[in-house]
Image (tube, rainbow, N blue to C red):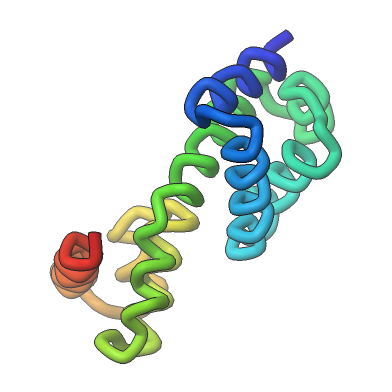
Length: 139
């Protein structure tokens, strides 16, 4: 039952059947950017058409948590800010692109990104602001 409501939400957002198929194809392609459990959840959702209940049972967490996680992943993958970063590769360093992936795709907090790259929170925040300015110009 939860699965059908979710599918209806995605369908409502796209006006045509072709638009729905395009979104699913886009999500499948961009799901390759994910790692670990997030990638597995998206594959179960998109490729295997598992319900939230089935995914929750397999992962050992509450059904509502799985649904929230899937919706967050879909929102991040369709957002496209990281894809814009990839289009502007020449303006960013490799480390900045990796930070953007951690922030925009994986949803890591800036403090964790700072620890991962052994830099300061301020430096990560400045990098994210710079990237967001780049993405605003491209829109």
